[in-house]
Each structure stands twice: as C-alpha cells, then as structure tokens.
Image (cartoon, rainbow, N blue to C red):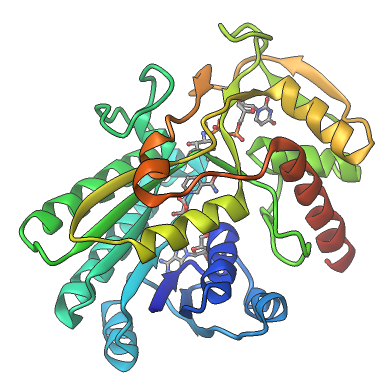
Amino acid sequence: MLILVTGGTGYIGSHTCVELLNNNHDVIIVDNLVNSQAGVVERIATITGKKPLFYQADATDDSVMDLIFSTHKPDGVIHFAGLKAVGESVEIPLMYYRNNLLSTMVLLDNCLKHGVSHFVFSSSATVYGDNQVPFLETMELRPRTNPYGETKAMCERILTDVAQVNPELSVTLLRYFNPVGAHKSGLIGEAPQGIPNNLMPYITQVAKGSLQELKVFGNDYPTPDGTGVRDYIHVVDLAEGHVAAVEQAAPGVHVYNLGTGKGTSVLELITAFEEANNLKIPYRITERRAGDIAECYADVSKAREELGWTAKRGVFEMCRDAWRFEQIYAAEV
Ligand code: NAD
Ligand code: UD1
C-alpha cells in the first residue's frame, strides 16, 4: 500500500515509516518540521535502504493537501502530525485546537474527496483520564482538563461521526500509552527541544550529564512504591502496531490500546535504566506534578485478539535503546 504519513519525521512517525518500508509499503511523509528535522528522512533511508518521498508542508493547508492527494492517490493515511506538549497547550490553547483539529479535518476531507478509505489516528491514553486501571477501549472518555487531551478526544469524536455516515471509510483510533526507546540503530529516536517534560528523555539527559538530577514527582501515590505507574511501550513495538492496523483496516471505527499491559513505577524505571546501561541516575523525591494520575496502564487484549499484535520488547530494551540514541544523537549536535 501507499501510505501518507503526516508527522513522519517526528518521533513515532519516523519509526512507523521504517516499519512500513520494511514491510514493503510505500511511504509519503508530510511534515512542517515544527518539531523535527528534515535529516530524519535520510536516516530512515539509511536504516531501510528505501527513501520515502518527503513534503515539507502543513497538514492544515487544504490546497497543498489536495494537491498531494491528487498527485499520489494514497491508499491510506496515518495522521501523527500534532502538537503534544501538555503544559504548552494550557498556555496557548488556540494553537493546539487549531493545529490538531484542523489538520484532522483537512485530511479527512481529502480522504473523502479522493476516495482514500483508510485513516489511522494517533490518539492517547490521556483520553481515559482518571478511570480505573487497566484502561479498556469501551470506557467512557474523561480527557484530563488540558487542551491537548481535549483535542485527542475531539478528533476521535469527529472521526467517529464522519465514519458513521461514510460506511466505506475505515477509521482506526490508536490510543498510545507511554512510548519510549529508539530504533536499535541509534539513528532515530526522541529528541525533545529544551528541558524534557517526560520521564525517559529526562533520565537520558541526566545520564549524559546535561541535567544534574531527576526529580521524582511524588512518592505518596497509592502504588506499590508510592511513585507514579505507567505503561511504557517500546516505540518500535508501537510502530509495528501501526503496520498491523493499516494492513487489517476494515470499514467502520476501530479503537485499540497500544501498550504492554504492564505498569512500571518511576523508581522501577530508574533501576531498570541503571541496570541496562550500567550507570547511576541521581534523583530526589519532590512534590507531585499537577495533573498527574497515580496509575495508567492498558488492557491490551483487544489489539492482541483483533490485530494479532502484542508488544514484544521489555523495559530493559527500552532503556538500552533510549540511551544508545541519546549518546549517538548527542555526539552529533
Ligand atoms: P513529534 O512531535 O515527535 O511528532 C509530530 C510531528 O508532527 C513533528 O515532526 C512535527 O513537526 C509535525 N507536525 C506538527 N504539526 C504539524 C502540521 N500541522 N503539519 C505537518 N506536520 C506537523 O511527536 P510524537 O511523539 O511522534 O507524536 C506523534 C503523535 O502521537 C502526536 O499526534 C501525539 O499527540 C501522539 N501521541 C504521542 C505520545 C507520546 O508520548 N509521544 C503519546 C500519545 C499520543
Ligand atoms: C504525559 C502527559 C500526557 C501524555 C503522556 C505521553 C503530562 C501531565 N501528561 O503523561 O498527557 O499523554 O505524557 O507520553 O504532561 N515523572 C517524574 N519526573 C520527571 C518526569 C516524569 O517523576 O521529570 C513521572 C511522572 O510523575 C509520571 C511518570 O514519571 O508518574 C511518567 O511521566 P511522563 O513521562 O511525563 O508521562 P505521563 O505522566 O504519563
């Protein structure tokens, strides 16, 4: 199949392009490079031996998208392009609503106009909010009160409503848990700008010495060691989940959790990182971070049963690959 991948030079998008190419699909990347670099296209080519077509373009630009759809006639779209920093979405909500909602609507419109029947959307476990773990696809959505989470729930709604009146359309909503790690080549991975907000990139920066110590946000949660529990998933497993989703797309709306089904605490992740990489991560317990929940992990049975997909890589591999990428990347910038 020919897949149009928006946000394809970003963290999850780039790994998905690699897996699509490795599985003999063709790829067109559309990315405006607001949070990634054009050099990623070359790296994808180095890893796979195949160079995807790349357009530096904005997915909210209807006329450009129309041109790309009519020129290439893709079989499906995977829509990763989006803004994702929770704190920034509280500061500049309109930018988040505009970018994340408009890009989804423009792409969907072009799918209908050009007869593209597969649409895969990057959603997030954040839509479950403070439901009881493990999170199940059938639960009522309770996006946390930040514009980023709201955009994910709203896009799910829009896609669902449109699919209901366009029965030929296949919409797959993939709810990611906590993607971490990097491709084993160390050529692509997560390279956040500035001080990272998320745990794994913060740990790798402490390991590198760019940041002095990790702040552990609270140890008084109702979890086994008091620190927050999350379902970390290796980004290559996540990418493989997308290949399964596009290959098995069927008319209608399909929602899948992409996680491992296992929770890991902050302290457990620190220990795993230290053991995997044979180094020490200095840390200090601090106050809870506003908006955090105690536990977040998936029920993954639906993806296993319907897509035949399960995450294969463990926390050790996630830590090893994240650190390998940080070292290679840091040596280059
Ligand atoms: P990322 O920032 O690395 O990748 C997103 C890419 O989209 C970037 O390359 C950026 O330049 C591009 N982009 C943004 N707006 C665009 C636009 N209007 N037009 C064209 N390109 C645009 O983020 P990621 O971690 O790879 O996340 C990919 C998707 O998955 C996002 O939609 C994100 O919300 C979602 N998601 C991510 C996580 C996570 O923890 N990383 C968790 C759940 C869901
Ligand atoms: C964050 C986002 C969430 C998004 C998810 C994507 C917030 C409030 N939530 O969630 O919307 O869907 O990323 O992956 O930003 N931690 C520390 N010290 C740190 C960083 C994190 O102790 O420096 C802890 C957190 O309290 C949490 C765990 O590590 O318990 C994981 O944090 P993080 O990587 O930010 O992910 P989420 O909290 O799941």
